Amino acid sequence: MDSDFMLFAAVGFAAQLVDGALGMAYGVVSTTTLLAMGVSPANASASVHAAKVFTGAASAVSHALHKNINWRLLALLAAGGVIGGVVGTYLLTSIDGDTIKPYVVGWLGLMGLVILYRAWKGVRPKPFSWKSPMPLGVLGGFFDAVGGGGWGPVVTSTLLGSGADPRKAIGTTNAAEFFVATAVSAAFLSALLTGHWETEGLRDHMWSVLGLIAGGVVAAPFAGWMTKVLPIRALTWFVGVLVTSLAVWQAVVLFL
Image (tube, rainbow, N blue to C red; front, side, top):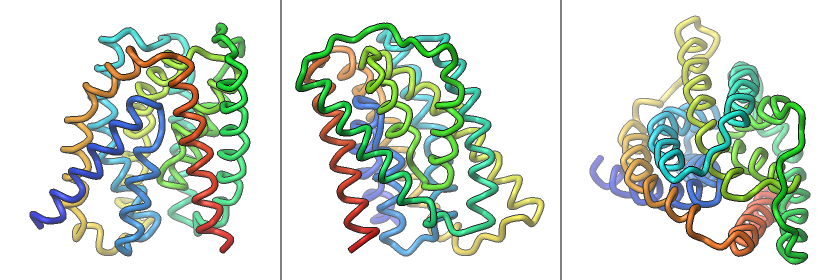
């Protein structure tokens, strides 16, 4: 138990540091690690979202203190994310979530290339011009619930690809993730209590989940500060490389 806790505390710390600073990767890294240990997709997603309730709250506070949040955008993204997350949860507990992973990988690859292009051209940030980003939140919440990670890659990537300020995009996406994770966790619990979802072996990984929470909460304050002080163009490069790398890696896993 102690070894599992320490291992996942380290994974949670590193994943949240990247997620809080760049707006993505906590769910992907944590879910992938759990799946490698033999945890089922539904159990992995439920575990990671339970952890993200705590890490998301800590990250949201950090970004708020460093003024990295657009509050109107936060409200709209969170509302859409809750809807998409709940729908995705009930879908995941009904069918195999692997069937839609190729679409997530394709989206990641496209957004990664767009962000790298903007970093290369040095395009300056501009106010996000969508009248309502709620549909983006729905899409991000859905993929996040079904894939166990996807909120950051989908939402942050799209915001940056549309020309949003990286700091605001990252901070707002991280803050909204708290509400999405809470809704998804509640949906998993509801599915379990109503008999819609029958889980096996989830308790065996409780120390792993606690490790993810502990490591993520410790890393969250540093992540908000990193987002605030890193140069915008460098931050855009980092996000683009990360998204593209995740897409290539997941494509290799899926198709080879």
